[in-house]
Every structure is written in C-alpha cells, then in structure tokens.
Image 1 (cartoon, rainbow, N blue to C red):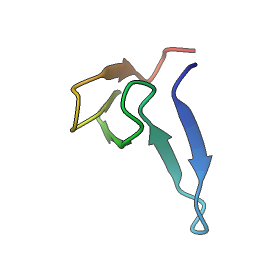
Image 2 (image 1 turned 120 degrees about the vertical axis):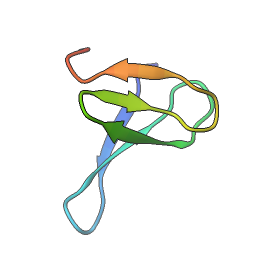
Image 3 (image 1 turned 90 degrees about the vertical axis):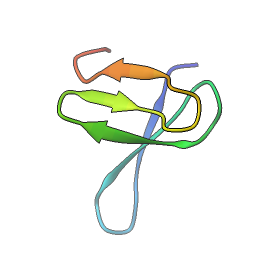
Image 4 (image 1 turned 45 degrees about the vertical axis):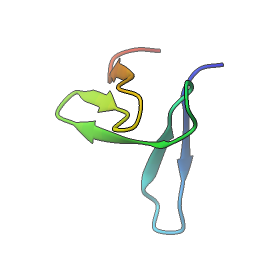
Amino acid sequence: MDYEAITTGFQQWVHICERCGERMEERHCKIVCNKCGLTRDCSDP
C-alpha cells in the first residue's frame, strides 16, 4: 500500500502514512509522518 492523498472539503491534499495511518505533513519537498518518522520525497510515485 502506498501513501494515500485525499482531498478535504477545502480542496487541500491530505497525505496518510502507510505505516501508522496518521496524517503526514509536507515540508519543502518531503512528506513526513510526525508519529513514526516515515519520510517520502514529493517526487516518489
């Protein structure tokens, strides 16, 4: 399962961590989970 990106009612992308299920945060060109530390690059498929 890859990380999921869903849209909220405000047309904002929300990334969900594939490891723990928490919401991930975008930092520059990285997507980071604050709970488990999983990091994805924004250029990852």
